[in-house]
Amino acid sequence: MEKEYTIHHNVIDEVHSKFDIECRNINMYNFKKNPLMRSIVQNCSKDSGSKQYKFIYNNYNEIFNKIDFNIIKKFDSIGGYDYDDLIIGLNPKVFSYIREAIIFCKFYLEPNNINKINNLLIIGCGYGLEACIIYNICNVLDIKINNIDCIDMPSVAKLQNSYFEAVGMSNICKSYSPDEYNKIPDVVYSNCCLAELSCDINYDYYSRFCSKSKGFYIVWGLWAANIPKYYEDFIVKGNHHDLINDGLENKNTNAIIFKYK
Image 1 (cartoon, rainbow, N blue to C red):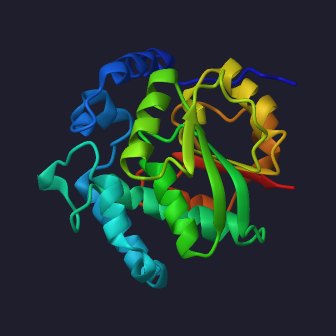
Image 2: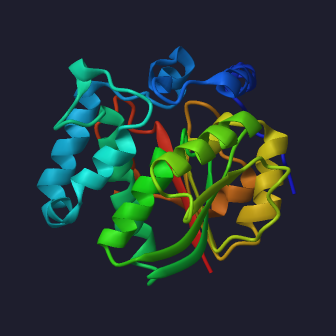
Image 3: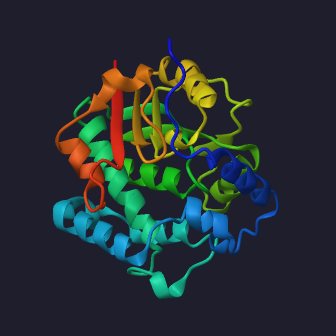
């Protein structure tokens, strides 16, 4: 199977390595203000967050009204705030995560009649907030997740575990470095992470996790790299593709790749 594909940004590995080094000594009280954290993870402006908020409120109002925002605020309270950017007391990135979690549930889990996941693997979940929001939104929609595993760079995985402990989610969520993780997940989820990795790492993750799982759901950043041939049969077109790119200047910024056995 052909492993190689075109990568458009060769500096990504270097940036991620610097981020992993910085996460070794990161402060849990204000890590969101770290420049690399802001560019890699907290990369959502107030304007973009407001658009996500309005999208959720206008299109999924029933779900919006069921969300316990006190829990979401607890999740968002770790790592500090930029008070000038808050939307109903939350960082803009929160609404990006909520929107993406709703799309994951409504366009992938529900159509495939997935109402219980024993083990969800998330490849690259920032500092941990994304995993907690996915769990919460699935719970709102009566989709049971028993365990969420995350894999990331070693120091980032350590930060994620500290975060899960701080928000009381360590009984559900746990992070590992890639070398530590040897489970076969039920479902693999990755949101704009895989396209930023090398060809070798991507093929390793495909071989070890995605190809052996019951299904996978991947948002692939076309700005970073072309889609590998081993995923080409699973590219989604139509409404789902349009929805994931809604509000972006380039309507082909992201691609959706998914499969369920």
